Image 1 (cartoon, helix red, strand yellow):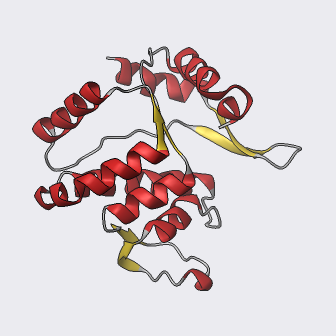
Image 2: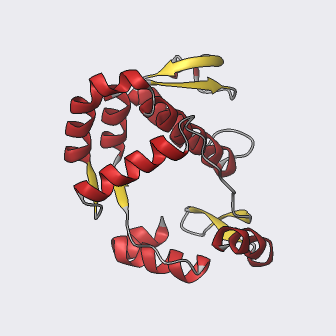
Amino acid sequence: NAAYFYGGVEQTIGALENYAEVPIDHYAIVDFEGFEAVVDAMGGVEVDVEDEFPSRWRMGKGLQNLDGRHALLYARYRGTAGGDLDRIARQQELVAALRSKALRWNTVTKLPGIVGVLTRNVETNVGPVEAMSLGRALVLHDGQGRIYTAQLRGTPTTLPNGDQVLLPDYAANETLLRAFRE
């Protein structure tokens, strides 16, 4: 987030390539409004809400179909005991749920609306042909919508200006990154 704030896409890619030692060829940027619109265009997203959220959000515990606004609230909330680490886990859960829903056979009926929303709300350097190839690979190689993730290790810290950051644990992360590179 800091790299993007200070230097946009180029600095973010440079920081990730430098840290992970993995080349990054493509990117996609979705703003909050776009995220809400994509979730709404897909008819919501189903997640198992475990944490307690402010009552004014009207989001109960258990399996919920969240609209775009509630999905964004769910993804951004830091008020749990784990703070940012819980938030990251919820974001990964949302991405997996959205991907799984996108791969369902009946999503094709919503495709024109979804593509329209993506066109208006996503900044990317992935061309249409590459996007179709990526979509086909996702369907053919992993039709169940599974995503495998590993969370880099670090210590949550609050900077003097109030920003919350995760200071990386370089030794622990090297093992994860080595496995990723292989």
